[in-house]
Length: 375
Image (cartoon, rainbow, N blue to C red; front, side, top):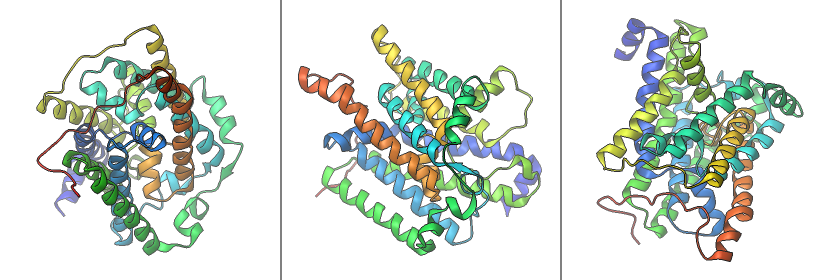
């Protein structure tokens, strides 16, 4: 294959970094156009709104799950040695960390991937919040917050392998996993049909999901070549570890070998910037006041610690981990949804109903294109 020769010529480490840039660019471009965000989807679902954000998330989730499982079933992506499945995991970390992340994304008005996308189009609130998120994630991994993360993670652990694989635990098999993904896709289509979701919404979301599957396939393929096995972990998209990794490299470890994570974050930023520039959505935005700033930064802190504790963010656990049916990712995703809905109800929804004005405005609407789902 041409790609194998190219990987051998540039080396696995650089090939992974280039792949991270390319796949990240696709994710960033279409996440910006579709307004993909777990926080917005959660608010719509819990409040019973019909703005299309839940449909966007469903399309991304179903696409990532269905295509990833299809690649695994065809033998094109062996993900069995991925960290999310092969190594020991923490159910307590997934539950507690997922809940903290869910609270944080309501406070910061966006999950970690959405902060990166918004920062690329000129949102200074998201830029500063993203930096706090990266610092908190690094502190939780090797810094001052690491002891707390380790203590919470140790409360309830699960061995790697079959004990973390829901496909094996439930006995559904690969066919059952594909059927499960197909059901979610049909649900997304039906939801989009009734909500008349614009083309950018469902098409962009599908491309977001495909970028997850592409990352699983690409990193598995590079690892299969076995040229530099220790430099080629099998992984997909996530923003907790990679954000901390990029921050570390920028500050004091610039000589480390390239990696998929190193390419992913700038790739997403570049893709989002290009989408915003192409459609004239670049706009500088700042904080509206001190209280707003405190809320955003505290939310980012919770997301950084919670994402590292849970083993993934809204994308890392909610899409990438869920797509390979690791039990800890599903626990984390459920905790994110529950905690985010509860936080929105307590802090924002009741305030809005009492004042008849949005306490924290919802995200940007999904932009129109040539057509949409119609009845």
